[in-house]
Image (cartoon, rainbow, N blue to C red):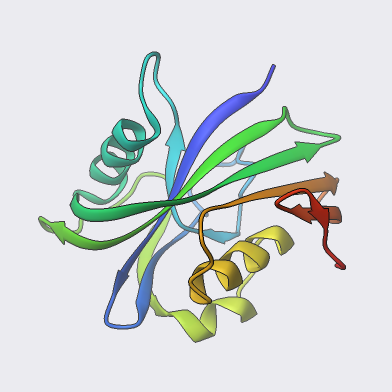
Length: 157
């Protein structure tokens, strides 16, 4: 059974708000740095999900955001996941502690050296280059990226 999720990179002053997933033991993202987001609730649109998840995880209300792409994750360990990818440049509210990890504003050019999924580096690069709406497929064996395709065309990894 596949799952639907959102992921959002909130940007401010050349930095993204990143979540270091260190608080939950049974976490497929344990010890990795990721954007904010989570699973859809019944009947939610991608936009409703990303707005709710941003509020729940960060305390921030997004006021300017853009739907940037869809990422299909295929794994030999976890269920297939369709992740709806967003960026945000406007928000209101005060940052709060997150129960899933530690939130930190990090310079975008420093992200590539952090522990993260290999496929995340691919879509972060696409976001940084201002790529138009894209479909990215990522296939993992364990935590190793074994295949990637952008808009249906295989990428060299």
